[in-house]
Image (tube, rainbow, N blue to C red; front, side):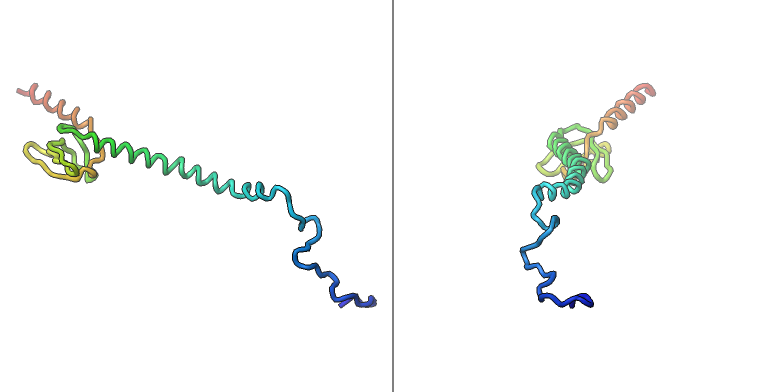
Length: 135
């Protein structure tokens, strides 16, 4: 299908065999590997930021929690994940006896202890000094 008034040329007019692309855009580019890495840079930056802001602090908190649970000693004031304040009365391998009131000891899993409570100890000292002053 040639233009009107022009003779029809061969059947391969405008045909380019596969693998024989011509022109400046079709030639193999140098540095294409670097350019493909440049396209991945924003994704890698997002992954790095995600790791720095979320995963790394969570790992640090997890390590700190395990160190607190491993270092429990009898007499430590603690807080459980259920919100129960108590003092460690006895320790087993995976269980902790908490004294939540005078003579009341409950048993909780060691993993339920989320931290030591220094404020609880200070409150107990304040209460004892108030009681002594009242007598």
